[in-house]
Image (cartoon, rainbow, N blue to C red; front, top):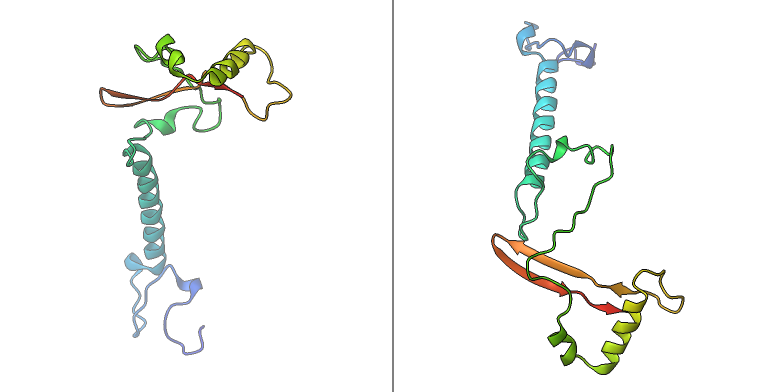
Amino acid sequence: DNAAGEGVSVAEAHSYCTLERQCNSDFSLRSIWVWFIVQWTFFSLAAIYLDNVIPDALGAHKPLLYWASPSYWGLTSPSVEDHPEEGASGADEDDEEEEDEDVLAAASEVKALANMPMGSGAAIEVRGLRKTYRKGKARFQAVDGPWYS
């Protein structure tokens, strides 16, 4: 019993009582809590799903059934696929002629080490980095094959 003798205690959450102690088990405090928890769970999962599948400002989104892939659940490692674009080959000869001699010399040094481990004197080496963005049918070549250390 509570101190005032009125209201519903946690032990009586399965019942709903008015001030006159008339109980209605169809509309109990427990059923209200269960509905709140069910609705909170549903709307939280819906928000997380929609946040992942609706494209953001940059157009990035996951597939509609992203949660069905084994890599999402950690069963396999995600794969990264390289899809070279048409006409998006490495640096053209025309571009290399426009560059400084020092840049060309550094690039040829790094290209010579292409299949070897990174040089001991270099903090970082970039070897043929390429990134193309697509939005619809339009393509944008952000980085086109630089080589430097």
